[in-house]
Image (cartoon, rainbow, N blue to C red):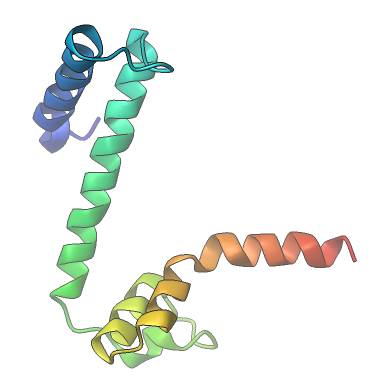
Length: 110
């Protein structure tokens, strides 16, 4: 666990436990390890959102959007495309690595 995120993890873990006990049983996360894993995944997602907010506030080199450049970075490229109003291109880049893996595995089977 990231030391700066421990408090948030504890809050989420506790809230999940209380909700499952008092409101509705959360199937699949009824044991401590599963619930803690879910809480940690939630913290990781929140951390990723914080990182994206930081990136959005920075200048981004145009080469980050060039897939032929050694500086290519799909997350930063998505920011550049979104700023330019190319929303579809930005969204496509968010899914870049998994799509490339899928295409590569399909091509290997042809």
